[in-house]
Image (cartoon, rainbow, N blue to C red; front, side, top):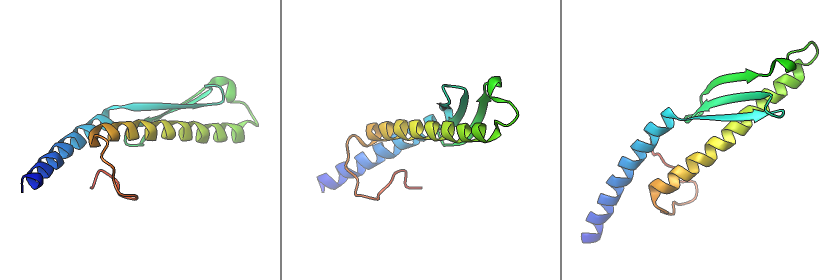
Length: 108
């Protein structure tokens, strides 16, 4: 039974660290860029789009399609950076705990 008690204690500690990590995610912002930094999007740690910045040189007649593509690319860049940062944070929280394939944290 000692192992079960120890496992429960570790699970509670992990749950506390998860709550701390989720609170941190609400505070961070990740920027993604495209077109040589001419388009920047900023996401929250939860993936919410906060801001879009567009270099005035891109705002020209007939350039709308390219601008739209750059916004999508900048969003993709920010999302990839966010996922990398979240994976690193999760690794710290789980302490190298190997989770079964398809099993994701947080639970809720």
